[in-house]
Length: 205
Image (cartoon, rainbow, N blue to C red; front, side, top):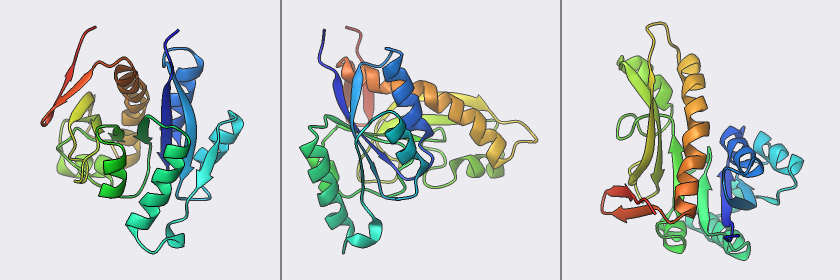
């Protein structure tokens, strides 16, 4: 049996994408193991999800560090100590620094609730509704030094209804997030992702 991909999952809130990763691991469709869940919010519900499934977790409070680099240096130490191979951001409400990027080059993923490059940053669902687009969706991408600007791995489209609100559209997008994030992680685990500049090629093996 092939070695399981060792994941570190970073969260700040509810952790529904964390739960999706856990569920896909437990049903056998994702060949990975979560080595550590790290939250910068001590009240994040995602911590309870980790506890329920017996997954180790750590809390790094934003205010305990003098700078973003100091925070990320502490984060890197935790991830390295846990032998993490891929870092997955699952609702992690921080802009990461080059300190973390250099430690895991090409090995940090994020999920964003919009069809990038449209509507980066916060409240992608509200941005889509306010702009009046007919389709929105979600994007899994590798993380670079920009905000939601890294090479795109997978996207899923969702129609925007005339009466949609940020919450109703967000709920439909979230269902797709839960499908494509574990799939992207499995592609990484299988060595099927090749980054070439801005483009990510999915290689059939």
